[in-house]
Image (cartoon, rainbow, N blue to C red; front, side, top):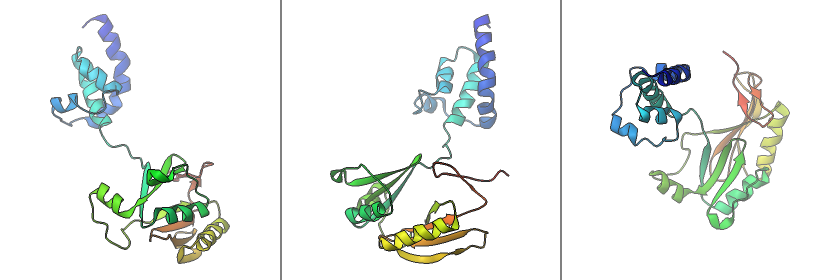
Length: 209
């Protein structure tokens, strides 16, 4: 092995070792890796070079780890019966969107996430499912700083036309929460959880184990 390759291997070995351990024992067809949609990944570039056997093994293993889905939720899209009415409801609660009406979908920024509203039929077709009716097995949640904030937000939702499914009150897990249902049947829990940390931008952090 050339000295340059030895130095390259040494510098990358530590960087790629963790990915390699995660992916150890995994196998994937080499041809599939060549067409993987992450050609900008540094692991991918090292794997394609393939000039140094040991380095190439580390890069391949790292690439397998890179290919896994990241544990991250970025967009929640709600199917609605009347897009304009739904937009007005959420704007009455303080959400803001710059989406033009002709776009046919409304995007509300929410920290590092996006809340979207789209016609129920269009969303169902795009998602490859049947529209159906009623609760779809998902409840959204909005965490706040205090029990008083829970009461305030639920009251605001009621004033905007929401149905109150569960009045605010103490919970079995030691917090305070209430649930409202929006105009299209999507339930929202508004909660104050004293065991979680609320970040300055409104996100939540789970307690350390």
